[in-house]
Image 1 (tube, helix red, strand yellow):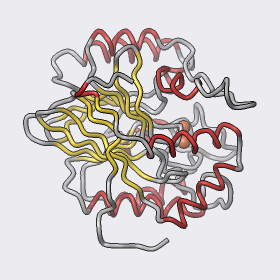
Image 2 (cartoon, protein in one colour):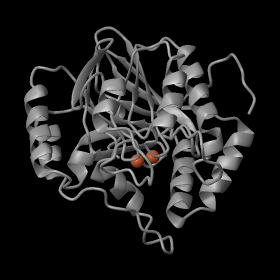
Image 3 (cartoon, rainbow, N blue to C red):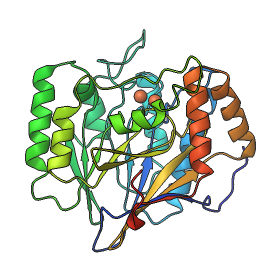
Image 4 (cartoon, rainbow, N blue to C red):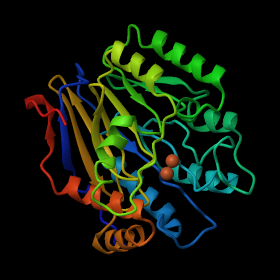
Length: 317
Ligand SMILES: [Fe+2]
Ligand SMILES: [Fe+2]
């Protein structure tokens, strides 16, 4: 892949009425870098994962961002050796950074047959101490959640505690952005509408009981949720709550999201991190892996070929 000193051309994918910010605030959102130092082959292009994440960091550094957030799956599968590579890559990032964990990052949900970084250590190194978390970037508050403890009944007490924490913490925050790894049901509904048309396509339902979380997001009037996990950009609504799903830096279409937040609202853009050759290789790997990944690659291509969703002018999704 060739390298340039120019910022990549961003592609607007949504114009949302909120959040707003009194002083203009720009936030980069990276998703699912799955940094891998010991693997090769497969649809996540592990052999290019470090280079892809490095390119995203270099592009973010060339912009005037107030902060960079990660929606998780930083690592291939939680190996401490991969987190060492992540630390080395992040040492080049020039903006404040915070991450929530992804299912591949922590022992409770990693499918690894090797040592995995303890959850407490992940939170210490990447989440500023603990999850759930609140961090302010520019004029915007980011609230980070552990969605592994929300979408499945891993530990019902921890789930309830987190919901209560969120409900209390959101009071008094002005237009906070909530981020978590797993997308909300509205996002999977958007994809599952293809199930009737595509043979053998099954879009996994990620949530056992999303209602307690959705009740809080709706009642506290949260203007935007950020997620990842599906390795494709997406814009959807769940019970009226807008959600922007970050693409992965490692799989087609390799990239990250840029949020430009002003008094008028929030512009969400996709920023590519791969060149034509890299995109083609990533598309072919994703296309030939599973029916589901083929659909995600196609849905991403449709989204990036469409005009941006303009919710400030009445688009409702
Ligand atoms: Fe992932
Ligand atoms: Fe994931």
